[in-house]
View 1 (cartoon, rainbow, N blue to C red):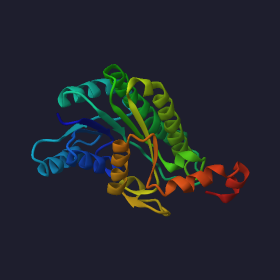
View 2: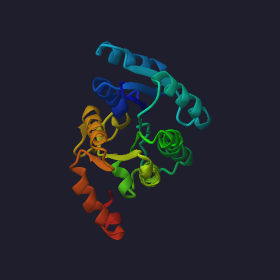
View 3: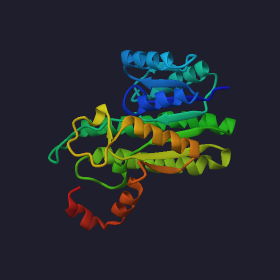
Length: 247
């Protein structure tokens, strides 16, 4: 039987690249996103490149928390079960240091954190009952420290990292694998307006790193790995010094 996966935020960037990689590796994949046309194009592309249908698109806005259950149930029915969920949905509004926009910050938290909790809770409950499954949350190196440029984005990713650790501690005794992914700068539609992206990689490279972490049943993985020593050092910097660095 083919393994079954859902990628939430699967229409572009890292999510779309991961849908392609999972399909090539023999998964049946449900891609969840807001835009029907882009989902259709992605699924048509994926299904042309494989011998049998591997990709299905499901339209859903992750801020619609009340509608998540119905979409999740439809996916599980369509795929005849579920083995893997990956939450890649995210936004990163570009703001300057003089901007304090609570409306924008609220939406960032709703998409990056509340949406993740909503969808991953649904998977956690199902996987606990079946005593198997893999849950993946895509965070960011930005969530490891409070940076001046993107306070709400950093907070949303830090919150996701902590939620994933708690979920891992809760589910490990039930045979469920919980993986936190912390990508460094990645070239995607979300980051096209970002000026400085040190050590940036393509979305396909990030998707490959995520797939490898799933195969290894990792717990926390930096993608690419070079960010592990970098962030280990950055996290060790005292706050008073980190503040003066203006990062």
